[in-house]
Picture 1 (cartoon, rainbow, N blue to C red):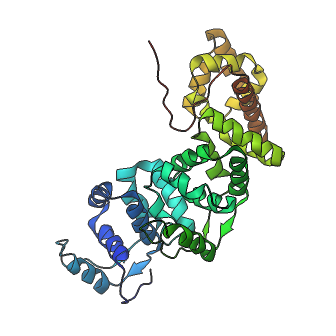
Picture 2: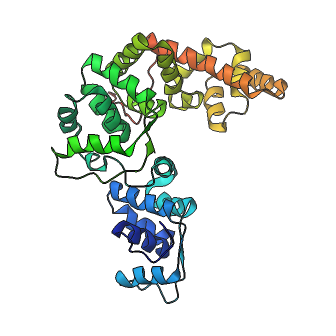
Picture 3: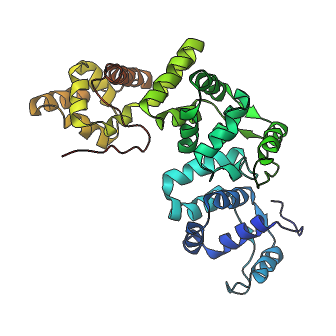
Length: 339
């Protein structure tokens, strides 16, 4: 947003007003707003550098606010946006939102689809070109995109997955063209979007992690048939060493039985305390003492050595899962249990 006297949009005025409220009040306001609206406002806060006091005062007057006289200018940016958003959304969701907005400072592409039922979107998209489907899924929430991906025909799943993973930057013209096709079947209109980075391994991994095991297997097998290197890159990011926290103790014990103590010691070097406790809590007291001593004796290690050791542990976990001996939790899924 330029620091001048030009007419501000409604979203820009909302951004100015929230910045004047302070993070506590602003957080309470954002907590009752729609997520797509929050992202639009957050985008404006990120773009906002500074505004003259006169412009700020005009915004406050328009909203009949009682913030106080002489409010001064308004300054936005990454930190004010983070302070306001962390209250209602938490640190992780805020980081994810700001990361997306940092590359796309305008309105969120396909925001009008984010509340649609995945089944409706599946009907809307299934007849489209795979590149069109990939572009739309890369912009949707991971759990929403995963539900749609699960409903696609098997061959189409692999095609779309490849396209999402290899997608880099998409022009505003392409996004508008796709939006025009879709908005003819909806009541919403997509505003012009800025160039944004979409696709890549991260959104594909998020989609797969939220898919059911059957769909996950089909997608990965399809990727393997088309591009073995790409499939391996996706697999390597689907489970990282710290995710061992999500394993049941029995599963951790099975993994540890197949990992050499020297490899495990290197993998635990410099790890988060809670991860170390998860591992050490699943070995005998004597093994725990020996492993702790071995870690201390290692001294300084190259990052590459630690990463290689952790990769070996992750490979063991993935092998056990493939064999059906352990189960990995995907995304935010919660299993039902029978007593």
